[in-house]
Image (cartoon, rainbow, N blue to C red; front, side, top):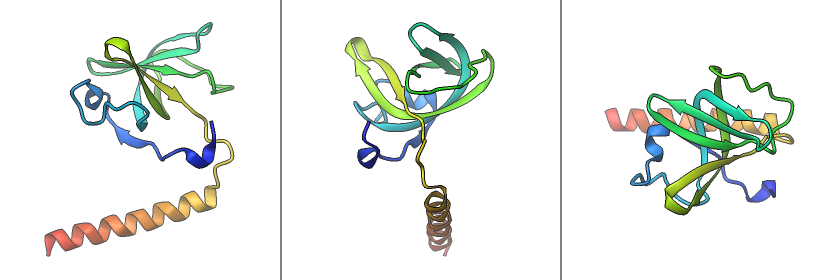
Length: 122
């Protein structure tokens, strides 16, 4: 995966990933959170759940992670939609992330969001 072409993972809930949802798009860059239901070491496929919604996560590019059932996980990756609307998130790690730039972007984003909120309430 070329990091220069990756988009930021948009935070979504697992319920928002129903086939009828606008978030359910091939290649969508997403950030999902759920409780680990299962993990298959041979295929590196994890299944996370949130309420009644589940999602498969391809974790083959993640290393040195202890996948413990019942633990909460958050994954960033791209959505691969296979036949019959079977979806899997191709998770990525963020090695090489410039943390200083990331922190600066969070500050700018929060300032922007605060301005938006104040302009809406005015």
